Length: 305
Image (cartoon, rainbow, N blue to C red; front, side, top):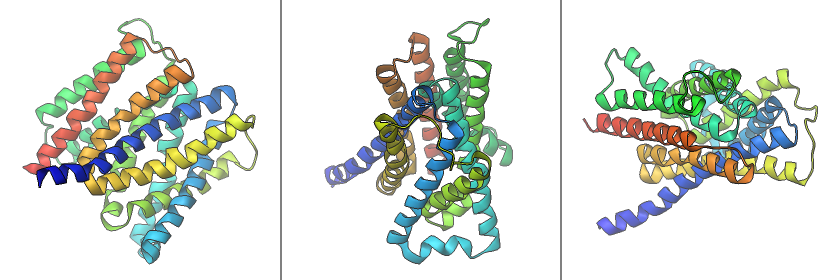
């Protein structure tokens, strides 16, 4: 029986790992489009949300039928989905991609993974309860990893620009908001529907600023391939695989496995785009990945109590 259960979890593990790799590589594709094809980050984010949102909503309709529209029945739910789309989705997408344009995919992805630390801090304040020992350790590791990543251990100089650091930390804060704000909606409605509507609402609202009908950058076969990858693999399939993995192995294990994302972004940026990633960068990356692991397992322990 134990062997059968373990065997049944293999597809879920593979799906969680695949979604993390897809997300990581999509960040490198974005860097390629910004650096070599001159695409505007805001333009790319707008189309990613609009196209990805439409595909996810269509998927939700085919799988859940009327449930895909149920979020629009109550005024309080409508307000929350609008807030999630206009604020949460736009913020987490734009800050991340803009951070990539200022630094590189590896650094931006790793900085965004500080987000869970802010989530822990929010719930500690909200519940008026001190974090547990593992969460204190995670905070120290996150700060140490960030310090090594942006300074290489020097107290006198930054190895990335102040703007890149600012937007990277902002993307971590946006990720925290994106994680916390839709919790109530996700308890009631389908994750595919919530994410799809959130993306579409965010994309349409952001288009009022970005004017996506004006073509950005240089378009050739490389541009189409990278753009297509971001939409199909980095958005739709990554999200679908992650949802499926959660249903098989649980949210805690799936989230822990998704910490592979910064590694995939770093490796593809180094080997494909020749991004310089030195020893201190790798040490900082490992410390931040350990942070994610500690926070994930501390959450699991709390749920078990």
